Image 1 (cartoon, rainbow, N blue to C red):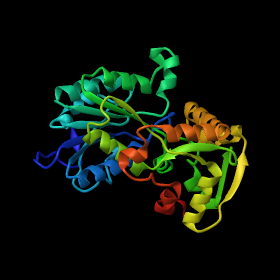
Image 2 (image 1 turned 60 degrees about the vertical axis):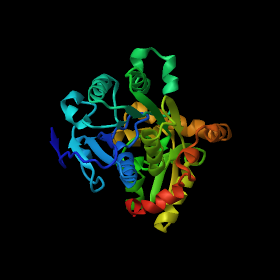
Image 3 (image 1 turned 45 degrees about the vertical axis):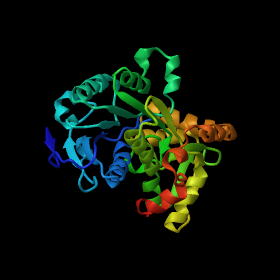
Length: 319
């Protein structure tokens, strides 16, 4: 096992293990590195210790004091058993059905007490299909059978996904097209909506699940409100201080543009479906979001951060 920072054994606070994997464009995949770095900062601020098990392209830019170990929960996780030593709780991000059992065996053997899963918004739909086709639901069910305490966090799309290059496809080329041409080209530009949560808010929900007992045995829908595509463009324009041209394309044109950028069909299909569905059922799905309990607001104790705030914080990516 190779590490960027050596593992240490101190008495300061509980030790949490966070996992991070390379960006994935598959449907429902969150940016594990961006969320993990936010979470590491928040946990360290409480006096707890943080260790990270990260794939090679996610080893850098962690907060000072974070123990960083190179490894993967998706490839031969038992090789990195030492990373679980002394760990109280694991934030399991980037797990896959093929190896989640080995991850859980390793964690249980090391005495880990709690597993908090970064899942996806929508595993309930997988129940209609044969278990051998499950992905997110397979990970969740394995964790539930592990004998350890568990919480599943099912987030909506993460605002920072466009920076790390993870799902959804909407907005994924905007940093390039806005910087180079001051333009956005995308399907469902006028009517399309997609639900987003700020990565700091998602990390705060994860911190609560790791550190408190309130959410044990619970599925937490960490969802943000549906945001209009044109409204997101306007937020970025205000943040960068200049106009951005917006050109509506056909779904097929967006599909081809996203394919050229390496997006798989499942990620594209779900993105296009959700943009259209949330636009057509905006009032209903907004009510569903607001009805979730506990809400992100209730868990974190503060109002969720807005896309306007996110755009101001990340304006340099679009200049």
